[in-house]
Amino acid sequence: MGLLYVFPVSMEEKGFAEVENKTLTLKTYGLPYIFWGYALAILIMILFMFLAVKEPVLKLISLGDETDATLGYGFLAFLGCLPIILFSFFFYEKRIVKNEKTLSLEYRIFGLKVFSEKFVMAQKDAFAIDPYLSSPNIARIKGGDETVGFQNKGYHTLTLNTQDGKKILIDRHSRKADLIKMEELLKTTL
Image 1 (cartoon, helix red, strand yellow):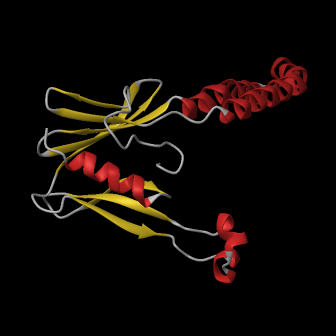
Image 2 (cartoon, helix red, strand yellow):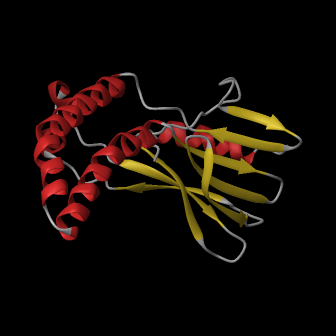
Image 3 (spheres, helix red, strand yellow):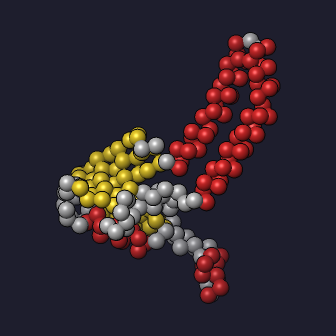
């Protein structure tokens, strides 16, 4: 998720990179503030949708049979769940928790752990950075100084090699330098 939810790359990023009891914990940053503007626009749109369909749906519930009432209540419940789903993107957090020999990936929404995985790291070459999706676009093919900002640079993945030979995706990022710093941070002994 490094393309949208960014991990810290140094211990100076207080609150997002912590060491406690020989355990390194890296937490993703939240979404940029511009996304809160998008959330406000989406909430306004949901409100207008609710106001537009409220009367017909309530009439359908009161005048229809059980099937119509179920559909009406289901639609109103769906509209009610949309803000919760929207805000779950804003309060999503991924954590990397590294001990001496294990690495855990935790996925949280609203601060509550939804899912976690624990892996035993390989003894040698536990981490690897690989390029991914580096196909060129027209700006990259033509080249030149005026098109540098529009060139597709692809992104890279940071993977964990486990003791049983599996490759686990830890993070992906468009800046390889940030993944290298994160790899060095994860390689440090605690």
